[in-house]
Structure formats: C-alpha cells, structure tokens
Amino acid sequence: MTSLPTQPTAKKLGLVIDLDVCVGCHACVVNCKEWNTGGYGSALSDQDPYGADVSGAWLNRVHTFEVMPQGGEIVGEAGEARIVHFPKSCLHCEDAPCVTVCPTGASYKRAEDGIVLVDEDKCIGCGLCAWACPYGAREMDLAAGVMKKCTLCIDRIYNETMEEVDRQPACVRTCPANARHFGDFSDPQSAVSIMVMERGGMDLMPEQGTRPVNKYLPPRPRKSLAASAAASPLAEDTEGAKGFFAWLDGVLDRI
Amino acid sequence: MHPAPSIIVFTTLSGLGYGLAALLGLGVLDPSLVATKIAHVLALLLIAAGLASSTLHLGNPQRAWRALSQWRSSWLSREGVMAILTFVPLLWSAWAAVIESRYLMLPGLLGTLFAGITVYCTAMIYASLKSVQAWHTPLTPLCYLLFAASGGALLGLFFAASSGGPLLLLSVMAVVFTAAAWTAKLAWRRNMDAMAPLSTPESATGLGDIGKVRLFERPHMTENYLTREMGFRIARKHAGKLRQLSLLSGGVVPAVIALVLPIAGSDGGLIAALAMALAVAAHVLGMLAERWLFFAEARHAVMNYYGG
Figure: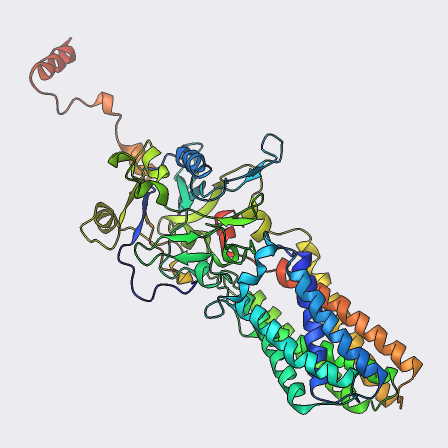
C-alpha cells in the first residue's frame, strides 16, 4: 500500500546529522555503498566504473556548501565565509511524497518504525518517486531498473547476529567524527531527541511539507574575523601563569 | 527536468487520441461516413501508441500491470486504471460506428467523460508534484485538457473536411478550444516566470540563518542520476524561441486554417482536407515543442543541492 500510515508510527527511527562536526571525509558515503551493495535488495551498480564518465547509485552523498554571513568579507583564506560539509540521505519523512505517488505499492512507509522502503520485486522503475522527492534521496539503479534508497540499514539495526554496538546504520557506525547519530525520535528521552532539543535541530525544506524525521544540527556560531584578529596571540599572554611558571615569567621579564 | 522522448510522445499522442475520442463521443461526425470510421480507429491507435510509448522508459516494464493497484493514492496508478476503463466505451462506440454505422449516445458520452478524466489524471501526475513548482498549479491539468480538446477538434475538422461534411460547428470548436488552450498555456508560462522559488539553497540546507549559501563542491565530480534527470539544462537558451514557435505552430497556424475554411465557403473536399492535414501536422509539431518545454523548463527543488 502506498497510502501513508494513518496513525503516527510507533517509532520514528532516523538520523541526526551534526553539521558542526562533519569534516567532509566521505567515509559514510563509502561505507554506505559498501554495506548496501551487498545487503538489502539488488547491488548498487555503477556505470562505466573504471572509465572517465563514472556514475552510479548512491544512497548517501556529501555536498559541500560555502555560507557567507551578511556583510561578511573574503580575505584570502581567512575570510568570513564558512565551509559546511553536508551529508544527505533519505530523511524518512512523515509525509513522504515519494510513497503516495508510487503506482505499484513498491514504495512504502513502515507503520512500526517509520522507515521508508522500496520493495524491489514490485518496483517498475518509473522514477516518479525520485521526481516527487525534493531532497534527491532516491536514485535509480540503471542495471537493475529499480529505485534505490536509504533503508536506514534495516538489515543491521535489527540484526541480532551482530554485536549490539554494530546495530546501527553503516554511515553512523563508520563516522570518525561522530557527526551522525541514530535513534528513535518518538522517544523524547532518546539521545537524538535530546540533541535536537539542545542544539536546535532543524528540518530541511520545511516549506515542502514533507515533515522529515531526520534532523540537522546547525553549525555553532563562529567568532567574526574582526574579533579573531583583535585578540593577542595566545603565546604572548602570560597573565594567568601560576606557581613556578609565574616565578619564571617574572625572572625572565627582569633579565 | 529531463524531457524523455517517450514521455513527450506519450502525452502528445494520447492527448490527441483522447481528444479525438472525446469529440467522436459527442456524435458530431456522421458514423455512416468512411472518414468517421477511420477517425474511430485512429483515435484508438493514437491512444494505444501513446500508452505503449509510456512504458518504454520503465526499468522493469514486465511488471507494469502492478501500476493498476495504487489508485487510492497515486495519480499515475489512477491514470493507468482510467486508460483501461476508457477503452470499454471507446471500443463499444468504435464497433457501433465502424461495423454498424451507428452513433450510440451512452457509450459515446461515457467515452467523452472517461477520456477527459484520463487526460486529467495524466496532467495530475505532474501537477501533484510539489517538488516541481512550475507544474504544481491547477493550470497544468487545465492546459492538458484544453490541448487535448483542441487537438481532437482539429482532427475532427480534418475528417469532416475529408468527407465533405458540414464544417461550421467543428470549425468553431477547433478555434475556440485552440484559443482557450493557448490562453491557459500563456497564463501557465506567466505563472512560471513570475514565481519566487519555494525552496532555495538556504532553505534546502537550513543554513540561511548564517548567511547566503552557495554550492562549493558537488558530492561527485561526474553527473549522476539526479543531475541527469532533474538538472536538465541543455538548449534552455533556445527556450524563448521555442516558446514562440510552439505557439505559432501549435496554435496560430491551425486556428487560422480552421477559421478560414468555413469563411471561404468550403464545404469539404480535397483542398480543405489538405489544408486541415497541414493544420493538424502543425498542431502536433507545436505540441511536441510545447511538451519538450514543459519538461525542459521546469526546475526541480533538488537542484538547490547541486548549484542550480
């Protein structure tokens, strides 16, 4: 059924992505492809994989944006523009437009945990769900002719043959900077819910009315360029020295 | 959006076919004439060719029958169901006209109604997508319906002219529907040109509170499915000229020919039929350009993540 669950789902499983922490290493991208090309559904094919015009289906991609504050200036490499690495995968929306447009019932949202999945045996590869998604979370696998998307690593998170620490999406497990977190958003006491509350977690494109489950934590505020320039270099300031170092500081001053 | 030839051909041919079928359902053409019998067959062929073309872009067309199952939520599914249901009155009407030289009111009007609903469903596949802002307007189904009616009336006038039948009523219908269709289409274009983008790089990244957002690096160096499918920009520079050409060829030329025929006092015949064949050919050409623009000019929200 491609009608969305009528009741709020029992769990709302999803990701928190911390834009303050992501270093843009693409490890989550690679591990996502690695896990999912051998897991749920058909393999994630690449076209012309060793050629000049390589492309393929990926469920997670890292974009990089430059953000220029109002009135900010660019001064060589120390300008006020910020670089923000931006990992993007399916947001498992509560009002997922990709689900309702599906003509075959292949695309569905699970009532028990809110995960949006594609039943590849029913998918005809019409591509309409990819058109309906404003986030670009769905990509057609050109070899298999079916739509691929993030499964939230459904074959890991419930997998009791794995050690508990590994029962997380591949992207979360592999992130060396701890920028990705997995949890249940319907539980206000869960780590992800608390993180979202404390850091002002936000929705992407709220105006599209999709009510995404995944939340993004905004980068923390940064000191302005002028403020950074005014501060005296740390190494020249001995103000807070105590004990032996205060004595040494005094002696060296007198010499 | 990528203008897939299969989809352009599908919407153009099926629109024309359903338009002609809807016209035939009204009983304005004499079913005892050979031209009318051919018209019935042609309408069915156009619809069938359009539907067949629509399956060409599927990754797994052998499962296309599954697309009939989700009519509760999906406009694409509704379209599939309606396309099949519409064949029932259309085949019934065609049988009555071709074999028995009779016009039957019940299947006729039912065919007209169902053809309209099917075209509406086709248009709603696009109009229901909020992610493609230019399409997400009630003007989209209005344009599709009026273009189908325009094409149907022009084809009807062609068959009336070929058989020497009375032209006045069909001529009026052709001119009125063609003018109405292009009035709606020009309003649609004005709507697209004037719209402020619903989503921006700032809203797409949530970073608008910090400042102006600009793409610094794409996730991959090469193109991917998303940029090929949603990021189509080839030949957009010719969009202005194509817009004018589509209006000229799809609207002005056929409408003028349809208008001149009864004024010139023609009651059909070879010259009138040739003139109408030209009008229909111009209309189809214009519609192909119009449909190409419909896809090529529409911008998808995902391109906010890809720098335009």
